[in-house]
Image 1: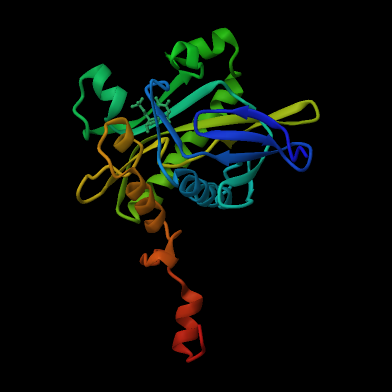
Image 2: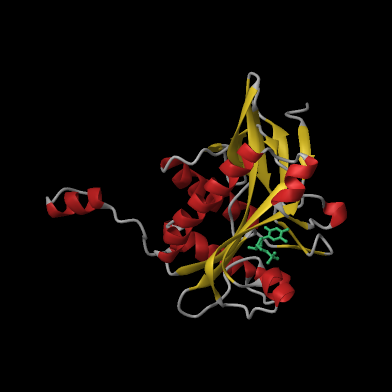
Length: 263
Ligand code: TMP
């Protein structure tokens, strides 16, 4: 019996048709790739962790009013999301020099940037996701001026929120990649945040030691990928049953404890 139809298989996720029209199921794989899939591997349990981390971040972004495709997590590896038309642009937001910025411009990794940088890459694996400017986006019609305005606005808002979120758990948000989609309602579309936010597409450095807690461990053969992703999830308060310190102030339990009730 065919349970559902596969729509697309990417490098780290599979998309299936959702239960209702306009919905999609995102399945998170353990597969890891780098350098445009020239390097391939598996990070055991990565899909489960990314599903949880992305759920958490998207939920919190939704709570502050950022429109996202996230509906709900379905199980360990799957989440239900709104079907969107993906804008073929990878939006990279940088707070600290690292990776390709450091290589391209010769800026030492770890140098704080005087202002947040937004870069755009054309989403095309065959071309190796080349860097583009807003001029290219307008010239080839990949997104309208209005859409680009919304995208840049949301990117900054997400960056401000995530920088604070991670700073609060002792993590420096160095840079990250976002993808956006068009949500169609009748003849109109609006831009919403899509894809995922996880250590696969972020550079996350321990604020004290500078230890890398992201996919650079895989890209650079540093080892300890699973432990790094787990540490991010633990600090976000998502693995409390595994002995992590709760990072969320639970005032309700505190009040009950004070009042002598069972929390
Ligand atoms: P970069 O320094 O290699 O350009 O990467 C910048 C950020 O974007 C980094 O946090 C990793 C993320 N990224 C992706 O999510 N997918 C990609 O294909 C690339 C190249 C980078």
